[in-house]
Length: 176
Image (tube, rainbow, N blue to C red; front, side, top):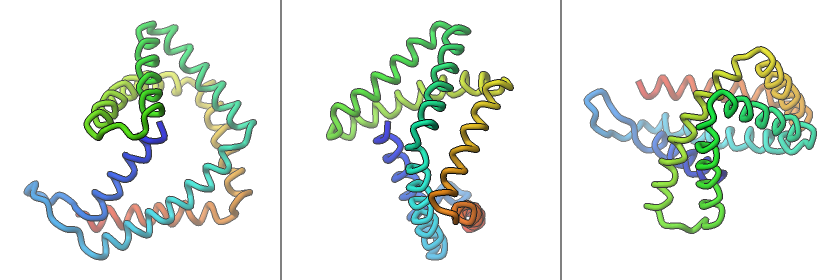
């Protein structure tokens, strides 16, 4: 799963950093300003992710997150038993990628597409369940604890978040 996230992030960064699509659908190089903002965003986001990763290693948070995930999946399967197969398919894809990190690009692309399809189905169902108050409250409590941990690790976390939002806005403006 980490491989998919990393690959998607790299593709996103490369596409923003070097190319954009103009209104006629033709590719054009982005401005130096856009590329500079994208590099700054990428560097700052890496720092933010590192803080988040450290905070996420808290055993209590991991246990609470895993319990919430399991409860949501159990309810999803209870409401729609066919989702058990979708969950199994996604897990199988993750295991294939983890078992063979050096697989060829074609196979990886195929698995990535399958993973995206299964994830889309699961996210839609998960979203419905997460709208229920008891699940929403649990998720918000976990996020609050995570954020508190992040701030304890690096007190500049709120400033980093503000700067990331500011850079995202600038990126949106430079692509228009």
